Length: 342
Image (cartoon, rainbow, N blue to C red):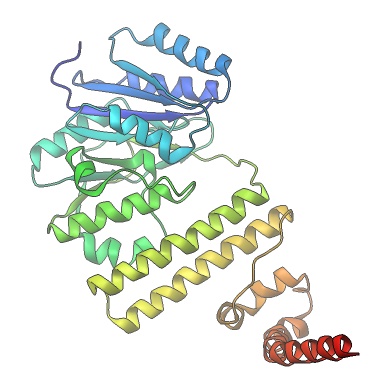
């Protein structure tokens, strides 16, 4: 039985046994003793779950790992939440099952929380890697003002990676778990709620430069469903975020309009890029505001970017089509009525 648990490392996993083993070993290799590991599993196959349990049994010489399984294919948010609910530590950190921690990562996080008792959130800048990661443990950290750094700027284009998030478990009681209606942006939405809570509480957060957390950077196939799901989730999340900004009056109206353009550019650039790579789904409607700001990007979608004349003309073509659409509707309805009467 573990006593005096300071940190809970929550590892949501789904298959990928070879990567999970490396992640588990990095978590077990921490130099401090006052922590536990929660492996939250939703693997599809019993054989995969058996392999994961065997790896835990073979390597958990300290008896600090708890394995949790309730149902296969829970997806990211429910699987992570399953692990967070089981966590008993004063502090919690998420570790995705393909990422790695340096040996002194957890002890450094506990040290920072202990030294700065008013701080609720610590996050890392990650070290991207593909095969091997070379950690660079150090004493550096930064006191980050939530409003000016994140809520006024970064949150509109990025989030902290789940494996870099570390926070007091008491925050979960105040802001809730990951939103399970989201399949992909659940971590972004959760990070926003963390930031908003800390801003209202008047707290700064601590940022640790890259050196302690390795983020595995690997290309995985993106199906049409995944690309479009991410796209629509992005719209839903940012509609919610912008409403909160208006209610809380976090930014001036003109600044918020500028941020809306930033969001739109990010959203449509991503979906156009996905379409360029995979070409296995139908693009959603590209809004006129984006077309006018990025005619060259729009021409990539139209497949005629090579001709500068068409690059120049595409916004005007789009405007003409948009202008003509009401007349086309009236014309078609008239034809339908005449045909019906005839």
